[in-house]
Image 1 (cartoon, each protein chain N blue to C red):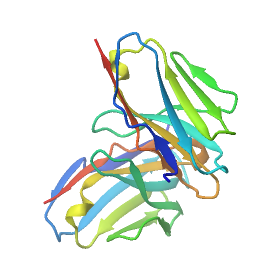
Image 2: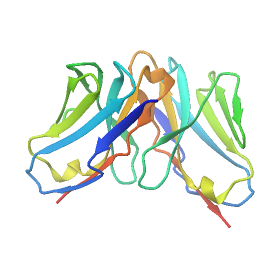
Image 3: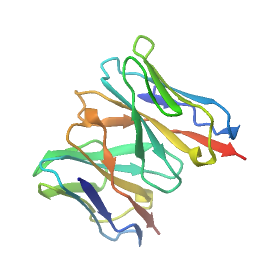
Image 4: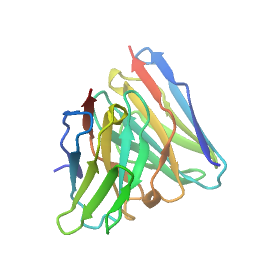
Length: 110
Length: 112
C-alpha cells in the first residue's frame, strides 16, 4: 500500500465548476498535511497547509479527517489557471521528511 | 527573505558519465536540505536529506550520492550515470519538514 494515495485523474471540468480531490495516508502518526500545486515541468509550490479544524484560502478549502486518515481539497469557481497537478503531502516527525502523493491532474476547460 | 538556487536547469549526459548538481540556499542558517527525483509521469521520490554539514541520510540505494560541504550547499553526484537516472531532480529546504518545503526550480536530466 502506498503511504499517500491519490486518484491520478485527470479531472476535466468546465470553468466555474466546483471540484474536489481526495487523498488517503497510511501512517496514523502523521502530524502535518499540505496541498502542493505543480505546473507542467515546474517545481511543486505550496498551495496550503491543512489544519485539523479545516481551513479556507479564497476559493480553496482543505479538510482533514484523522480518524479516516483522509485529506480533501475543494476548489470553487474553477479558473483556467487552476489547471495543474495537485499533490497531497504528509509529514511525521519520525521520518524527518515529507511524503508526496503521485498527484491528481486537473484540467479546467473554457 | 530566503531563496533557493538550483542549477543547471537542463542537462543531457551520456550513459557512464559523471554528474554533479548543486543547490544553495540564501537567507537562512542550518536549514534541512532534501534531494527528490520525479520520473516522467510519476510522484516525487526522496533520495537524500541532510540536517547539517556532513550529515547525509540516504533513502534508497542507487548509484547516486550526496554531500553537504557547507551549511547552505547541497550537492548530488554520480560517478557513472545510468539510463534510469533520467528525471526531474528537485532540491528543497525547510527549517522543519513539518512546516513544509520550498523547492528549487529543478534540473531536468536526460541520460542518453
